[in-house]
Length: 102
Image (cartoon, rainbow, N blue to C red):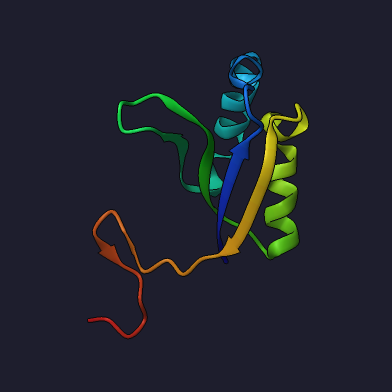
């Protein structure tokens, strides 16, 4: 199954995000096989908005929750909120994954 995880940093936590960034990137590399996409949310001017998006493969909701809870950003108490939603993979990189599509 595929899950969409959206995170929202606590206010004024950019310094904490930077402290945890190297460990977070290591975590992503270790879990690259599960990632369809991920990245930080940005303002129109390119500045970090504080939070991110992950699209991952997981066995179920609990597995997706365990994934995000293992992220150093989560363990470092960076997030004010985490939303986990099951997601239908319709198109990725221009390729259709819908079973009824030609």
